[in-house]
Length: 477
Image (cartoon, rainbow, N blue to C red; front, side, top):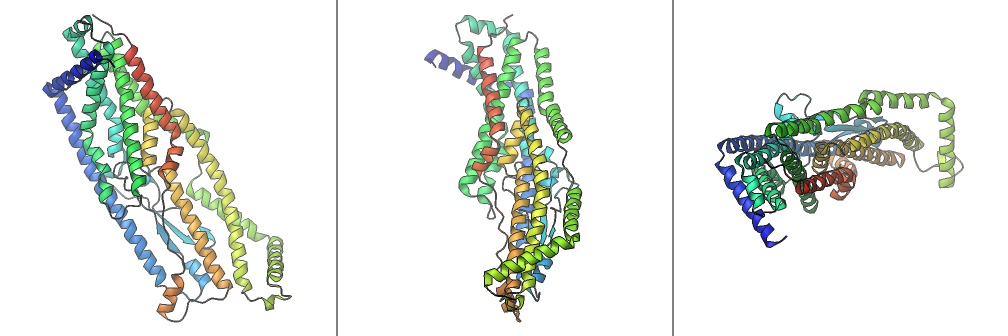
């Protein structure tokens, strides 16, 4: 960038900010949006931080109840079961994503696989619970409208005042003018977005944060960079349409129509298309299918007899004895372990079919992100906020892994004839051998891999429209 171009860019940038401050209608519009965003941020943060803290308290109480149980043997404890509570991301206040739509608890026991229950939004009447009122959605949905208004006003001011042709006749670079105006719009929108972006600082004061510091930094940085690129693309589109149009009203109408298609119509079409092409079964249908598979397997007495015979033969060879009575373990406990493993295999077969349908839906949604940067931005925002459907499935999967581990550990104790004890202290030590449920989020690196398509779409959107706006020659009256 030459010194002349730099001077023109800086002068245009400063002039645009000065004119914006002097425009009472624009100032009033931006002030109202900033106040509304601030209220949404405060409300959303308080709501989700309170819910997250309650989840931590409930998990602690559940652990204490497990340690204090008076169950007489290890296998019966697998039927007593325990409830695990979904951890809430510290960035849920910024973007709750789909957290409200999915269950927040899972009850774990042997021989049965429970679905996630207690959705936060099920019995909530407050509109604050709705994802549409979250700070992230306001920034990603209403932010482009502000850009369209500010950008259109900026170009229209030059056209209607006749200063655009005067600027160009003085030898001022059109690239520099566009960059200066675009930077002024971008800085203005980011300043107005400050109440929402301030939520990135809140997790650093949270004592119950479930995200490591480095991971949190990466997540917040990616969201901010992608949001800025998303805005840059809208600025480029606004400048391109406005400078190529001879009518301010026509350019504004076209931009609003494009915004409606990109941010409102395409996400709905994408969801309907994904559901039509690859419909997902309901939780009730999945439960019934798993129960039917287990029921059919248990109805075959021949298969059960063959499985028990194979198990007994394996144990006789393992312990080098000739009779079942001579085994140093409880054969009933060994059969329970074998039965649990067989049931888990049946569950996995059903889950694989559901996962294939989910994967097909994700591919369809990824395809629509090419034509809808809003959809791509929502995917990046909810993914790096750890609040999308994929993170919920991660929680369900980790809960199922924990169920299998603690059921197997207790059945092994039953097989080895270990008893909880006679006193509360002995029983507490016995139950404490089963580690508590430690929820975990996948790393930011894994979320980067998952969101790569969306991030590429946003970057291509920003670069393409910026380049187009810089090289588009304006129509001069």
